[in-house]
Image (cartoon, rainbow, N blue to C red):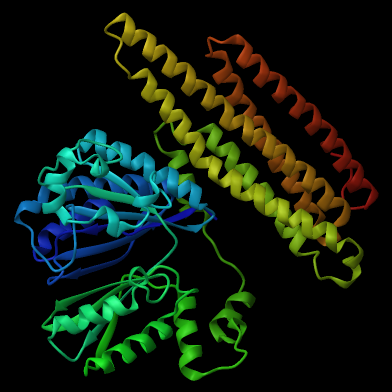
Length: 511
């Protein structure tokens, strides 16, 4: 399955639906992203848009949303109950499938640089992407909001942005980062007394000594006092724990809970957790949920023609290209090895090799993750080379800077497919072991995994060689080529070993 990232940008506008719609359309216009949710609140004067897609598509969609918001929203004219410092106030990226947090961090920082350079908007990095520890928490960055930051950014070095100018224009500043999934959860009280909501929020939030992983503010929304919260880790503090604490604090202020809401999307596990607590179910397991069990026995269906990555690969653009395709093939090979391992583990007749198959599974999943990340990394490396070629060359100094940048980017563009080649050979080695030890009924899947690994090696090798040919520093290129040749020699040996295994286990004749 292709890698998937969720993005949840918060825009400082809700009272002008046409503006929100224009931002949404700018996001949806990017191929490869799917709009998952949109939520606008007039009192907050804020809209939360949730979309997901492949890393490259999500990054571009986020940029287009930020650009459109900067065109249409003037923070000098904005008011609302929710703290804010930018037209696009905050842009978090969340890894969902086949993507590491590290990849989201790299994406956030890359987007931050682009927003600062092309849109001239100051950018601060937060959560996992933060470059300074004191900026990990959003509250620290947003202190003073737009009005306060507008003055401080000019003279206070502590408020200097991570990227971009030290001045605020009408679009304000934008905070970009990477984080795990969180739950935006609001509790409305049966009162219009905002002081009660503020007191409850202070009592329960982590920063005031309350519940861990809970951020809370008290505000007035739709004529009711609201405790507005972000639960940053529902495994640490669950929704039922938050509700119990709020009920207790509300009683002290002689108010009650009127109703609650979830803003945006919520993990299914969090709702299951809440239901188990409410029903006091002892020893409940997720396997007891009917839909979960049905999903395990229903044959998997998929449509490769709808693969976003394949659509991107077929497009009239130079990236993604052969290097990304090599990594994708290697990732498929690793996935097949993992399948062979899972079809072997737990089978009575294969108990003697269970420990070995568990280790094969562990290594296969590691390789699958690394090769999946390499799909995006290869495109990014190519784009860096193209960016270096676009640097100015008007003066001798410009030419020297440009030449050094091209050399550096080309070395990186060779290193990425070389790493793919190394991982591809590792996939072949695991596939050979899977064929020798694993479930005999899956031996052809192991052989297919090895074939995909070999294809990934071949394709990556072409990309290594073409980049080496463009290097000025011959020594670096020779080192890359020696490593590649050693990998190809090992791959040939693994192919011979695999054929011997296939013959011995009586499954396939020699090709």
